[in-house]
Every structure is written in C-alpha cells, then in structure tokens.
Image (tube, rainbow, N blue to C red; front, side, top):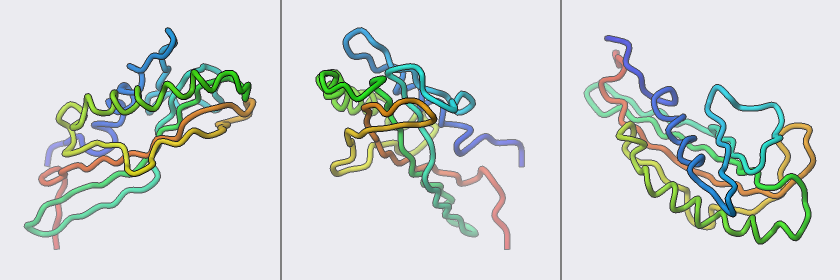
Length: 154
C-alpha cells in the first residue's frame, strides 16, 4: 500500500488554521500549528489545539474509521483583569461561526464539529509558566473514514 496520509497528519493543521481566522476588536487569534505548540503563551489572543482521545474502528471487509476527540484552548488575555471580560465574551460566537465554515476540514474528514451541549466554556488558563489569564475551552470531535488507508488482515 502506498504511503497514504490520513489521521492527524492530514487534517490537524487545517483545524488549527480555522481558529486563526477569528478576530475580535482588531485582534486576530494566533493559532499554533501542530509543529508550533509553544512551551508558554506570550501572544494574546492565541489558540492551542490538542488531542484528548482517539477511537479506532477497523474490521476485515468493513469500514475503518478514526474518531478523534480534542480541545482547543483559546488564551485570550494576558491577565485576569475583569474589565477584559467584554472582550472575552465576544469569542464564543466567532468560534462557532469559524468552525461551521469547514465541516469536512477541506474534504479530509467525514465530520468536524464542536461537541455539544454547553461545550464552549470561559475559564482561567495557564499553559506554561505565564500569568493566569482568561480564555475559552472548546472541545471538538473529528470523524474520519480510514477505509483503504491501511491494511487490515487476520
């Protein structure tokens, strides 16, 4: 079987680029690609996406699928100054609208969506050794048809 690109290598950076289209009050989100994930956050607003679990389903003669559950942390402010909450509260609608633009991640997957209900949560975050700050947690799921992309044998 030829080297067929599937899974995270084929779609993860497309997902990350979606978040990089979001802008609020003239500030565009810096969304880190797979190979750019930082040790600490020093750019605000920014987004870091990562996997939480992977379910593989494969069988002889049947479909092979991968179901990836992950989340994106939106690091929106540099501190916990309460006057920044108005800025933070503008992001959920922008996140929903951005995710809705690429339901198949450019045709690489069967389905990409934000997990429901009550999925987008305002939180206080740190990623590395930076000061605690305001952000959002956005859980998502990607379903990929992997039939024919690797060999299944008895």
